[in-house]
Length: 264
Image (cartoon, rainbow, N blue to C red):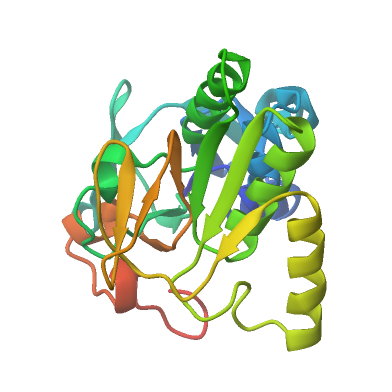
């Protein structure tokens, strides 16, 4: 029996390690990851802000042992009816049981200009690009560069705070949130504490400001306002991985797979 786990994030790696401990020898347990490391996804904002990569990742080779094995590759297609996965380098991989744990993709809500002009931090490559752009912006001559973080949830708030801490006086940081307040769903007293801390770091917060469109240097708001920027980072939401739709699976809201009580 071959069990294939796609993705070495929190969910995929946890599942793989549990199976690795429990499956008897003779089973073929395969972990497919596009990266040689497990990254602490909830800490990618620290890497994007300049922290060392090895503080937020673990080499997968340290964790994989028989009956498990590791394939470093990119998943290009799912074929559920044939029980096959297509890998970019390794070709077709058949399975008896598949665990899909490739994570999410940015949800841009159809806003013109955002996919083209905004960076994200939802994956290590994306966070690396933000890291490089931030460093270059902070090092340039002249007045501090302006980083505009769109999205006032935990990702946006944490990234903005890290940037303010890592580059004091070298960056201006703004959080732009469409809802009336940042950190939607949290108790109001906690939100106010967070707001005071962020503002104490010099971070500007613009809540209740939905975006209409974005160009290469400015976002345009409902009501006609504009917010110029030097670097635009999107932290405004996620949707299900696009491979799910291309595989013809039943989907729910924002492209997420429909599952039963056992996540099947």
